[in-house]
Length: 363
Image (cartoon, rainbow, N blue to C red):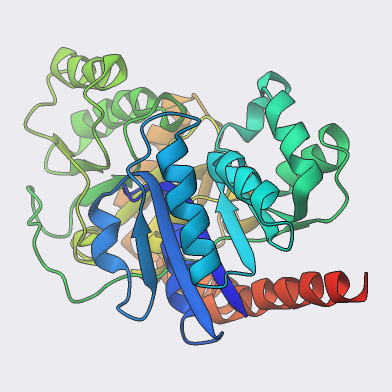
């Protein structure tokens, strides 16, 4: 079996992490595993294993003839059988399919705004889906959407899984050890850092020695400016710290005590799984698959999105109750290890690949 993962960039987003994780895991399970970044490289390039074949296209526009030719030649020379296309890379995968009819496309839908699917544009996607062999959806809402809107039935829910590199130790966080809260999320509006910062202001008034650490890609756009202005407006410059993307995620999280996600919308956030792998007590909003991962008041805390007061209350609960915090973190770590492991999900992925290949051979 010869499979290529196709992804737009190697920046530290959830879809990008999944693509790299799958390529790495498959390299030990199938005959050939490759990964292609189409538009942009990034920090995750360093996480690609040496036995994963790698290609970078440096694609500049939607229809880039040079990139299409380069990828088509790669697919033919490497005898790729399945292109596992992540997020918006489905369009390029479809073009390659038109040039190589025997290629199978598996599309992996990581759409983050799954709470607002009625606003999702899908005309081009629906046309391309006619060439797909299977769709993986990162939450149940997306699975239902694909069946209803794309009229595509070969869809399955595939939970994300996380793998952390424990060897890197570059980033040293500010603040006092034992009193750190972390939010691992790129600076995007759907992640709703504004609500988190407002909630932390209430925490800061009561517990001024606790600090908040926001780690994720800074796009230096209007939203990131709003986040910085909010920190300044609430006089939190010495208590809320912004870090750009960093490769040593495990090392960063291991310096913290509470992991929080304040998102307005999610699929199944990789960050939540990474919190579990590093034994953090977790707080998340009731969006996407967060409710299927976190059991409220059993292994973590769930709050409504866009509610600074609820989020502040949850943070203060875990700060004031160290025993509860440690109990939640232990149970959540066990839950992630047992239900969102690399082994279980790779088994499901390979099973789907085999089913597709067998079905095509019979036709």
